[in-house]
Image (cartoon, rainbow over all chains, first blue to last red; front, side, top):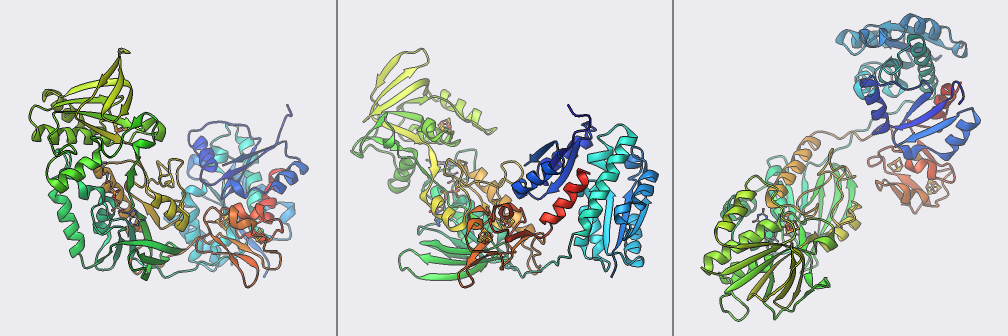
Length: 65
Length: 560
Ligand SMILES: Cc1cc2nc3c(=O)[nH]c(=O)nc-3n(C[C@H](O)[C@H](O)[C@H](O)COP(=O)(O)OP(=O)(O)OC[C@H]3O[C@@H](n4cnc5c(N)ncnc54)[C@H](O)[C@@H]3O)c2cc1C
Ligand code: SF4
Ligand code: SF4
Ligand code: SF4
């Protein structure tokens, strides 16, 4: 595995963003590789975002919704 | 006017300051090369959400004439609104502000202070980049109508009407038939541990005498358009065809249920000449002729009750039939002393605290209870297999069955008119079974009673009161409604009128403007989910607070 992978995470404000908050509230730990971006709904994620993100060096993308 | 960006880093007591290096954040953010052409004001604060913190922010925004604001603090779920409200007291448009979550999604998840600090800096950079691409948005205030349309005059509809009607709120209650009360209007009694049936008559009288409730009998919904606070409604009288136009701010769907026709099932064969009755037919018979008899007019000497008819086919338990079959047995035992009754059940559903004792009381009255694996009916001949695997045949004088409660055809018709989804069983789909059980995906349209799924009268009333309560808090007479500001828009110059987006929007917020040949977003309905944006082949759709550019800036910073 790459040493510092970049995992872009599009998180829906209703569910997965809230989930990420909950992880923090419970002081869970996860790698700094996760890079969250809040959106109103996972359906906002245009496939073009994914392509552009990979082109700009993302190692993985998580769409949470 | 040149950009002046205020960046305030909240220590949140020790919550943030204990786990990231605030001084390093301030130093590094102040000297970011990519923003060297902008004026950055970067300051820490002990507790931004406190009274002092808010006053500090307000002063900073005013005194520095900020054009953009970034608060690096907790989750937006905690204090986004707090900081938006601070902006509202100043010259800064609240949509020129953004919150960066360096607590829940940074300080609290990374034990290494240096790494957490690096990440906080990265997030804040993303926030600055994003806010620079934000644009001012302006809230609109819409007049709202506090009146409520209730569809269905059963126990759910009547209850909701009485919760809502009052001096500053009219209720329009429409009922498809000529009578109020729904199925309960056919009952001779409620379950003994519920109230007296006279309560139903009183409730109907109360509704009829309430000057703020207007009842439309033999009437159905013809058309509805609009949104919370502003529904335009057309009603149609079934007999005359006359229509009535109304305005209302909210709607409750309380159109009830019907019973499955057991004759559609393979193992239930009988005709209208046989002495086979549904529970509801027994209630009707008792109400209309005052006694229960066979079709010949004679008294039955024996009877069988069959539970769960069509339960497997329907895919759910109807929750009320075990109890009402006992209620029916009670009628029989009272009228025909010595009658032999056998109760054939595959399961027993006794959800309330009083139900168990009610059930036991029938054992004492000599009723025979038999748990079965299978049961089939041909006329009044019953074939069943008991738990020991033995096949038995009986032919009682009378058979009373409990067919599954199911959604009526009205659900489909109302779903087409309101675009409220139906569950796979045909009942209305709630917004969220746990979080929002009487709301629907459309603001301002609520569901209560058996059109939402099988329930007894107490539960139908609880749901009606819940829906009423929701409306009382959302539609306050005299108060204006402020719809979501972060909505989507369609750029006329790009829209080719392909209508793709119309199908994509789950809220029905997009309509087609025939004259201009383009689609248009109704901003009062749009929730800003952005679903439509990615679907538009022409790039004509734009999400105002989540534009491609704003998100792309965040992506760029994240991947730097
Ligand atoms: C035999 C039997 C006995 C029962 N006994 C009891 C009991 O003792 N205690 C108990 O708690 N529960 C009992 N129940 C359950 C009870 O019937 C329901 O819980 C209750 O009727 C649900 O009320 P509701 O208002 O949701 O629906 P409903 O009673 O079905 O009322 C719905 C109303 O909406 C009207 N309507 C339908 N479509 C439209 C439309 N498109 N436009 C306008 N109006 C429309 C209908 O005409 C009806 O008046 C029994 C059920 C059965 C079958
Ligand atoms: S309530 Fe009783 S009779 Fe009705 S489906 Fe459930 S278990 Fe069967
Ligand atoms: S999908 Fe795009 S081009 Fe097609 S109607 Fe909607 S906005 Fe217009
Ligand atoms: S943003 Fe969502 S709610 Fe608004 S028009 Fe687009 S799909 Fe519909």
